[in-house]
Image 1 (cartoon, rainbow, N blue to C red):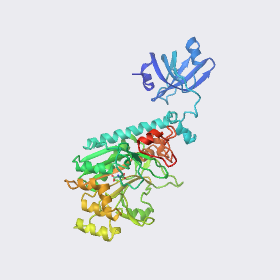
Image 2 (cartoon, rainbow, N blue to C red):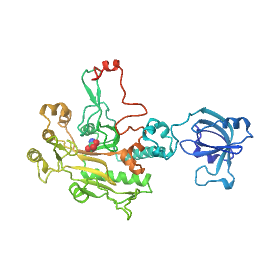
Image 3 (cartoon, helix red, strand yellow):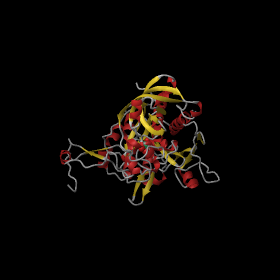
Length: 473
Ligand code: ASP
């Protein structure tokens, strides 16, 4: 395995071979200095005319060339040492140099200030943009967060299960991305807006505690800082109380912050639980920012004010469409009054849907919604009543949700879960202004991948195989 630059200080007075990118180059009189960079660190390399052939080659070096350098690890003269950087006490006296790959003039400079570069250019050349140490740090911490989550949940007997990407439409409130079927003309798969129905079916299957770092796809008009595909920590468990789920999540977030972001402070623990009604009354928002601003009106990004908003209404009246909609999604369990029966709730749904509250909870951080979930309906007749009030016809209910209604007839445990928006959480913890800064290959606000140039036309042959005709072909 090649030697990482961060480990060079262990090789003082030894001759080593290094690989990396030329980060910068300075000529001082007769001496050429370069900083060589790999993922872990940078180190200063010195080329002196005494090594005539190597020196001649070094004169040609330009930034971002990939090179192999053999040289001796020397202590720098004391007045040249820089204790602030990992390799600041040493330098490499180059003996041999090999150019592995040249780089042509870059469309922008590689630097942590890349936010000032035009974003379309950054996205088109994302592989260059990602060379900045800021984006590299974002991706490394993203990895650490996901690894932490996997370990935390595995220790609590959750198992990670993958669910299909080619599936059927799920009603999470957005438009589906669809994929035409070649083998079944005129039929389509949908990409999951979330693994909602699969995770409920895993509970019917008796897997009891599921999680997944899940990719979700929602075809929404460009609205704020959204991506057509994004990543959720999705989980579901059986026999939960609402508090079981909230406690699990607040423990997870607290431990994550303590381990990976020790410089950050959680404002209040346990996280405050605020009812939807109170949040709207006191903060005029269902995702209130509970941090206090200082005299200048600023808020400390290292202060993390988490909260749970609970007791949402089950339904909302959609004025434009003149129909009831689910505030969370149709699978959310209504709150039952003490002694209330399922028949009683069904009656209420039919007569006065606005009276019902939901076993729904949102997780909020510094004024952002970072997740949400609910306890679920597991009685087929109750679920049917919800679909009906949402305006679905009986045949449609059977066609769209028959599988779930059927599954619930074979021994279903009460269950519930939550999903956390990982991109947004990582953005907030990394103090970044947009989720695009914490996703390796994000799309533009209007859903284009500028590097791959997607979406793109497909050829006639592919269209024909898929039994498709575009309107202008
Ligand atoms: N599927 C829901 C969502 O994506 C989360 C949940 O209810 O667990 O918002």
